[in-house]
Image (tube, helix red, strand yellow):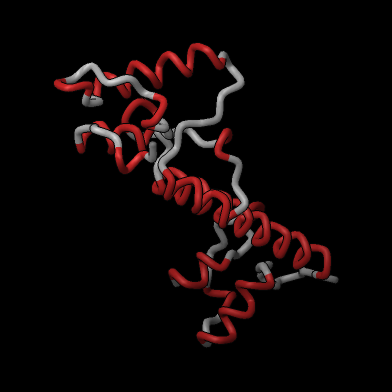
Amino acid sequence: MRQGEIEATDAARREARERGVDLTQVEGSGSGGRITVVDVVEFAEQQAGDEGTEQEPKASDAARRRAEELGLDLSQIEGTGSGGLITVKDVTSLAEGAQEEATQAAGEADGAAAQATDEDGAGEQRATNAAQRKAEELGVDLSQIQGTGAGGLITLKDVVSA
């Protein structure tokens, strides 16, 4: 019997999708053997207990697809959905956080490179390469900007907000 041919409430089908439960494995306790949400929840909890700690993270199908597209490991994501379910928003938030960290690391690397290539540095403002390029693009005088980076280093954010 296929999942579409099973007698189940719409809410039970939705719950099964969210929890990754195969309705063909669930025994219905409703009228005429119809599967209810309670049946799905109990089955999912029983399965989780049987599997111990080595269970696959609970995630919506869309979240699984998005995590796969982004190359993210679902076990590293904390779910904010019902019962700890991992949602697309959780996956996207983690990806954006990783991107911000990478951008920040790149900015710090630019700053270190700028500091290393600053030969005399006397009287000249130190700025990341990205900040220097943006200042040139915007026609901003770096000597008029107070750097908020490490050691007073002028960052891209400082130039843009000037």
